[in-house]
Structure formats: C-alpha cells, structure tokens
Length: 80
Image 1 (cartoon, rainbow, N blue to C red):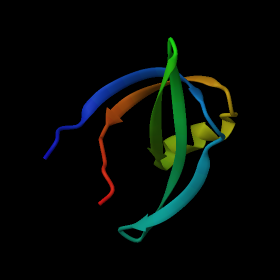
Image 2 (image 1 turned 90 degrees about the vertical axis):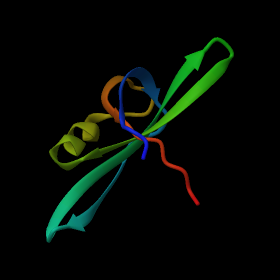
Image 3 (image 1 turned 180 degrees about the vertical axis):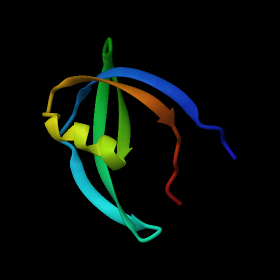
Image 4 (image 1 turned 180 degrees about the horizontal axis):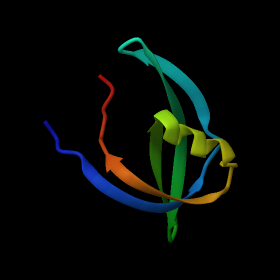
C-alpha cells in the first residue's frame, strides 16, 4: 500500500468546483472536487483535488482562474 504524501501547491483553478455528497455511517458527507493547473515553461501539470466535510464550503468561493494554495495529502489513484 502506498503511503500518502503531503503536498503544498500554488496553482490556478481550471474550472469552478463541482459539489456533491455521499452517505457514510448514516451521515451526509459534503464533497467539493476541482482541478488545478500549474504551468512550467512550455508544459502544464494538472492536479485533481477533493475536499470533504466542512472544508468543502471554502471551495464555494472559488472561481475559474483563481490562483489558490492547497496543502494536504496526495494519494495517487488509478482506474482499473
């Protein structure tokens, strides 16, 4: 099992966040999903982010193109 790594990113918001929720242990958990882009010379690096619970409310103020700072855990996922 891969260990989660801490990340510290300053990047621009590609699109406005998408909000949803799911149920866990009979409680609703709110989720905000968004993608950041960081430009390196002629290239770009995209990072998909998910924020859960009360912290998802912070993302309600995000607008496309905003330059934001994200600090948290990085977990790589691959679709089968």
